[in-house]
Length: 340
Image (tube, rainbow, N blue to C red; front, top):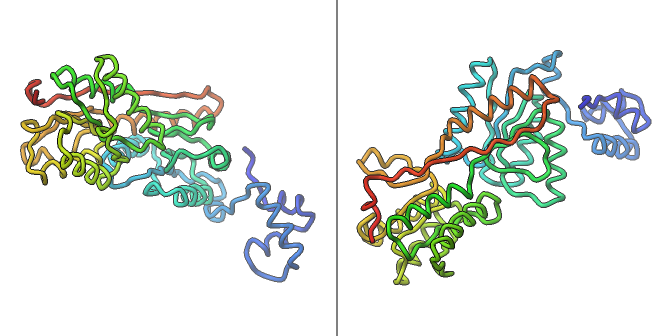
């Protein structure tokens, strides 16, 4: 995509480049009517002033941006380290931005990255946007340049991506509990407004259907991929009694909340309730505890995404690529880890 210039704006607005410059730099007099016409042209053309262009005439910044939703989540931290290792070997620098799953921060990060004129973007969206917002995001991504999505897709984006097999991974976790002898199984659900949350719930349900096991409504806990939400939902479910003999937690943060509620209830895993999580829980090895989980190669996801981005930068015309990585369940000890 050709870069929009001040000359393009001037042509669209029917004014001189000096007038456009005064509006952009907020210096000198410009009539209100002319200013509105210039600002409309700027918006229509999607012009973003370049901070990098003022100091780097070649436009080659040697910088790749990475936008993630949760810096404090070990899953994304490992992705960062994997991507950084590849980019460092390629002589690139990594610019990192975390959005905390806030839509406005997500959009602001993309705007800032356009100003920086990065050479590529690794991007996990903060939300599953509606059609109007997707159009806006797709426009921003096109303006940025080569992009690789990580973990969360944007429908119709047309860009490369590296994803996990969420449905298949959740299926494997639920099946591990079933194979261990459980017949009453609950789930600490993820954020169902996200595709990855719906996929994990679908995989869990598929495993129960194949085993002809029911899933009661009150055994579906709204964990929302959040430690706080999972803690509250689990605490309430345990207090209600007649709870499942085992639970599946949809991500590592909800697993933290689940385990905290179990501990506060004076219960033990696996003696009192069985458990398996979609991702490992960091830090438990220090005290000699390890819980069964699905294990993904998070650093591998980061490395694959960075390699794919470098390929795209080198070959802009290559066909769109979508990589879906499988995972494996790691069971701690024998199947006796799960109570019957």
